[in-house]
Structure formats: C-alpha cells, structure tokens
Image 1 (cartoon, rainbow, N blue to C red):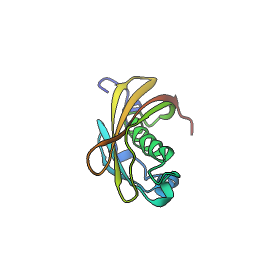
Image 2: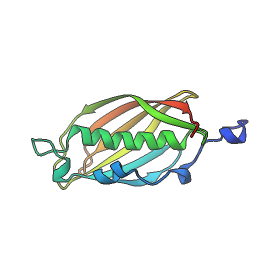
Image 3: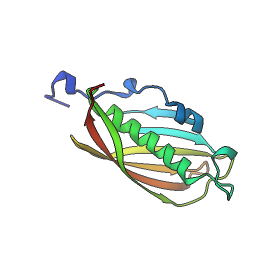
Image 4: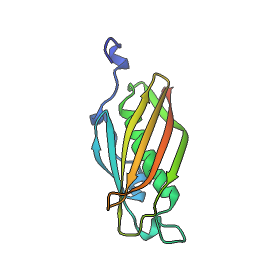
Length: 143
C-alpha cells in the first residue's frame, strides 16, 4: 500500500503460517500463495465423504475457507486479523473418493474493513465442483 505507514504494510505470502491442525486433519495442502491468489488441494478420502460416498459439503467448505482465509491473511497488515463473516457455496458436481479437489481463491474486493473472496473448486477432470463467495471482516488484533 503506497504511502501507508510501515506497520500498516500488508503481510505477504512468506508470512503465511503453516496449515492449522484442522486443515492437516482434512488433508489440505498449500500449492501456491501470491498476493493475488492462493491455491490449495485436498484429496477425497473415505473419511471426508457423506453417506452418498462423495465429498461432504462441509469438507469442501473447509477447503474454501482455508484458501480464502489465506488470501485475506496475506493481504492485511500484521497488526490486523481476519474472520469469515459470510460464506455461500454453490455445489455443482460431486467429487468421488480418490479424486483431488483444487481450490483457487482470488479477491473480488480488498477494502480496509472487509474483503470479498471467491473460491473456484475443480475436480481432477477440470470440471467445477463448487464455487464459494466469502466476506471477511478485518479486525484490529491485540494478541
């Protein structure tokens, strides 16, 4: 941010901490992180499926939240934090066990108090499986 005080400078991809234990449990891997986009992947295992034998919607939303939270995190100053305040997912296709879901997140809006992020999730065959839009609130962080 040009003209911003040094402590208001955004973090960058190098400042992204390791995956949380929850993300590790889900098998989420960070593939790429830039200020403009984050790509994460998750292999569909039997533990992540619903009763129909395809990837559970909650697992897919976890992947989307991980990617979106990462984009928000690296685009805000170290003195700030972020939290998801709204998320909407359109589920387009099922994803079977053994396949890998790729989540690509980009920012639609980068404001001082909110960010709007879009995550497109594709299957191994390249077809879209889901699209998530999230709003993140940027918070002052004292700890």
